[in-house]
Image 1 (cartoon, rainbow, N blue to C red):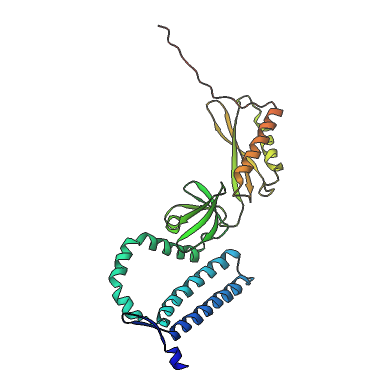
Image 2 (image 1 turned 180 degrees about the vertical axis):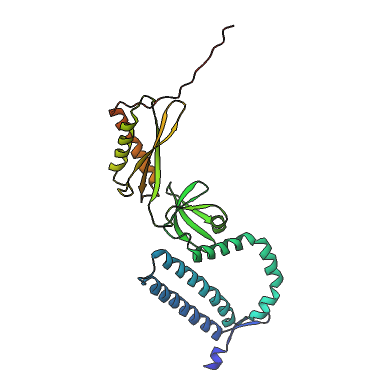
Amino acid sequence: MKEFLETNLFEIGNYTLKIYNTLSFAIFVSIIILLLFIIKKIIYSSRSLDSASKFSINKLTKYIIIIFSFVTSLHLLGFNISVLLAGSAAILVGMGFGLQNLFSDFISGIVLLLDKTLKVDDIIEVNSMIYKVKEINFRSTKVLGRDENYIILPNSELTSNRVINWTHSEISSRFKVTVGVDYSTDIIILIKTLKEVAQIHPKVLKQPEPFVRFEDFGDSALVFSVFFYTDEVFRVENIKSEIRVEIFKALHNHKITIPFPQRVLHIKNE
C-alpha cells in the first residue's frame, strides 16, 4: 500500500507529484467544502443576527478559509512554499504596482464587510444615482438600478466617494413634491389641499404626517412644497409622480392655476 501511495504520477524538473499528494489534496478539498457548508448553515440559522450581518460574516469567513486552504493545498501537492515565495518576490512586487487599484478594491471590500456602513438591501445614492445593494464581494459590489439593470461598482468607489445611505438607520426617509401657483391663490386652501393629497396616498406614512412649506416668492408663482415620509425609498419617484397627478387634479377642482412663466418684452421704437 505504501509503495502504491509513493508511486510517481509525473515529474516536471525538480517537482514530483505522487499518488498520496493527489489523494491528500482531494480529501482536503472535500473537507473544506463540507466545512464551508456547515459554517454557512450555522451562520444563517442564527436568530441574533440580521440578514446583512449573516451575509458579511459568511463572506469574510469564506474568503479567510479559502486563502489558508490555497496555501495548505500547495503544501499537500508537494510544492515548497518558502521556495515559491522567495522566487516570486520580485514578481509579486511588480504585480503590486500594476494591480494597486485591484488591491485597493480588495481592501475596500474588507472595510465594507466589517464596517457595516453598507448592507445588502440598503438603498444608496452614488454620484446622484440611486441603487439597491444586492451583493457585497471583496472586489466589487453588485447593485440594482432603478432601470432594473444590474451594475458592478468597484468597492474603492464606495469608500472614496460621498455615498448617501437612505436606509442606514432603518427609519423612513422624507421627500417632497414642489408646485408653483398663481399669486391670487388662497394659500390656506392650497396648504390644506396639498396636505390632504399626500395623506391619502397609500404608500405615504401617517406618522410622521405630511406637512406643507411655503418655499419662496417666485418670479411668476408662489412656490410650495409638500413633504412626506415613506418606506418605499427605492421606488419613491413613482410615488412622487402619483402625488403630482393627484395635486394637479385637486388644484383643477379648486380652480387654482399653475401659471406659465411670464416675461415682459420692451420694444424700442426708433
